[in-house]
Amino acid sequence: MANEYIEQGHQEEYKDEHDSDSDFDDDDASLRNIRDQRIAEMKRAHQQHQENMMAGHGQYQEITEEQFLPTATKTKFVVVHFFHKDFERCKIMDHHLLQIARGHVETKFCKIDAEKCPFFVAKLQIQMLPTVICFMDGVAFDRIVGFEELGGQDEFPTLLLTRRFVKSGCIKALHKSEHGKMKIKRRGHDSGSEDDD
Image 1 (tube, rainbow, N blue to C red):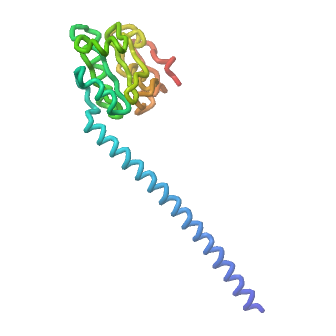
Image 2 (cartoon, helix red, strand yellow):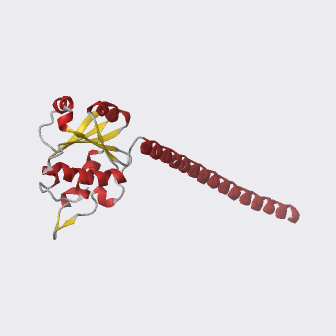
């Protein structure tokens, strides 16, 4: 009888050990599943990045009127700056858009000479330059006209324009400062406290 009790005790210990091994196997399978999903996500993101780079993302290029529709409809998010070559504020906008385009390859950034595309200027009701229009799947959904939203001054930090694009949804915030979680310090005072989300 004592032997029977000892054997039964060993069987229960074996069963407990076997159950805990099963838990480890379940945990390992769950971790493998999570890892495999993450690897698949990373592969998709890398492939999307490569496709975007091949489509001209990460650059800031001038397009013609003939290129406008194919450019605005071939990719999900496109930002188009309507400019005039002699306007200083258009040159300032070019400088900021070039900086943003380099870091945000999820969106295509380009510019078009407003004098050379009268059809689209009329169709999009552009009355002031610079005008920056955001497109999603070929449909205009947001615009920045002049510098009023950017402080009304010729000098403003690129981060302010970046946050404006993040807020509209045409680019993704890469870090807290782009999302508006941190204040922009400029000339001894804060300019961004209203941007805190």
